Length: 244
Image (tube, rainbow, N blue to C red):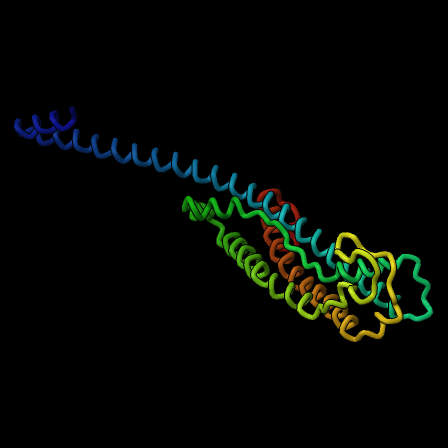
């Protein structure tokens, strides 16, 4: 309609009217684009807020999961060390020998931990990471994901370190009577023989050391997710900003 109107003005050589009509068209297009851009900007900012809240939920969940596995590993290593000390003490009175061996066996169990990256994966898959304007937040997020992947990649190495030295004697085949399956521990052990078996003692000590070494890796992992969680809490809820 406007094009036909401008064309008519030109044919009639009504240049002033044609110019006014042309300006109206250009201004209309410009205003329309600005409104569209503002709507998109509003949507992006709304999406950004929602994604940041979800990232905070993910960080809180992952932080608790890592804390739980660290606590479990330290608890197992402590009990294994205590059990080994009792085993090595010839004067110690042992009421439950099978429990003592079980505690030493559990030292070799380096557990994995299930962390959640759903929000980050969605941001990457949809290309929406760009709507996150905060460069520091993106840096912390990428550092946390990279750290977690590195720790996950190191899991098998530490599992091997904790189990490679385990000899058949660690499964108490030489020291017990009855079923010696892991879930059905025998009830009797010859502790005098066990405490003189250097391979057995070394295996337990090596397992405890591997578990505690991996705990230090977990602490690095914990720090990265704590940094992300604290930063998001500050940005979203003005909480804990003094740590940043």
